[in-house]
Image 1: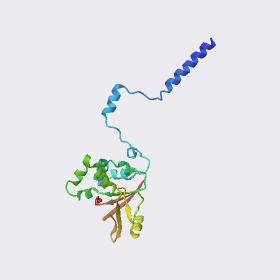
Image 2: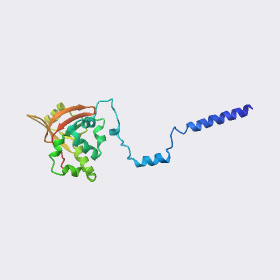
Image 3: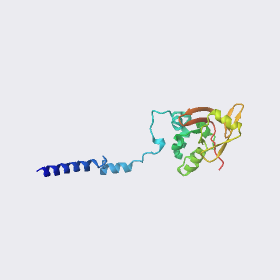
Image 4: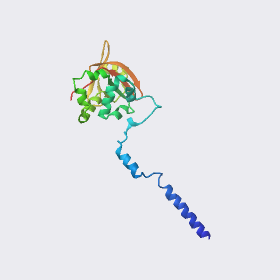
Length: 194
């Protein structure tokens, strides 16, 4: 009798073990599987992380300001959101909406087309320096005659003139510290020579 009770107990424990080893995974029903395949895949990468506790990064700040609606739309169209939310440090030279209006007619519309995604990404990464450049450091770089290395692989000249700091020939209008570096507001798009 003891052997039977022990055997039943062992079988019960084994059964519980097998049920618990399922990993807690719920197998989707046919309806759930169909629904999952019909919806667009969720965004992945650093830009998809929702963080309401930490200080805002460059992309979060840009999204919060109307002056950068065109820039944000371009960043999303180019698929480089993760590059702008990277932990950094990085420095973004952020063109305001009006900067895109200065491009030749039809240029922006053409760049936003899916077939021009890589060209748009190249132009936008020419606005991102993978380094920490507050205004004080930009002035030092200018005094030393150094150029800034950009994420596009190109270099931009930094100059100090009577009315302010210029990068790539355009004046920095304002600077904002963000969690992953700096945003320097500019009023021209820095289109690199290819």
